Image (cartoon, rainbow, N blue to C red; front, side, top):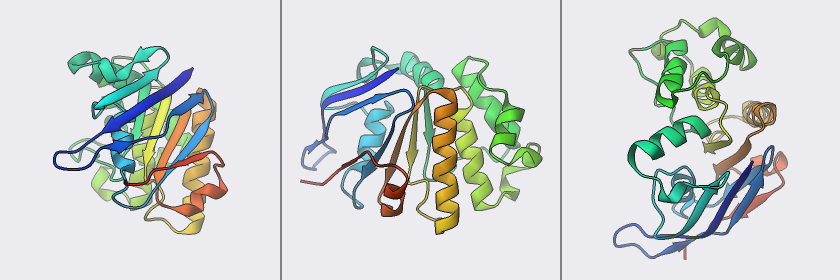
Length: 210
C-alpha cells in the first residue's frame, strides 16, 4: 500500500494560498501533522481524505487519484479505504453503538471487520447495545475509532484525537490507533497541535500558515 501527496495547494475564499509538504507512506507507517490553530492542519486532513479538492496537486492511495474522484465514486472509495476519526464523534443518536458501526459497512458496501471482535479489541464490547448518548467522552471516542476501522481501511486519519485527554488516556488512544493500524496494515496520520504525541510517533511534518 502506498499513500502519496504531491505539491498540494488550497485556498479558502478570500484567504491566502496554503502550500503543503509532500507525504509518502507505506502500510504500517505513522505520521504526525503538527501545527497551531489556524495553520491549515484540518484543511490538509480534509484534502487527504477527499473531503476537499486541492487547487492543484495530487492525493494518491494505491494508484487511485483521490483528488480526481467525484460524487458516489469518491464516497464509496472513501467508505471502503479511508477511516476518519473526527475531533467530535458525530455518532447517530438514534442508533446504538454496534448499529453505528454497521452503518459504516452499509455505506462502504463491504463486510469489513468482525464488529464484535473490534469492540472487544477497543475495550467497549459491553457497550455494543448501549445508546450513544449514555457513553462517556472516552467511550464515544473509542466508538468513533471503531467506526473508522470497521471497513479495514488502507489509510486512517485522526483529527486531534488527544486534545481533550489527560496524559494517561492520551497515551492509551495513540497506542490503540497504532496497534490497530498495524493489525490491518494501514497507514496512520494524526493531525494535532498536541506536542505530547511526538513521544509516540517520530515521523512528522509541520504545517505553518504563510
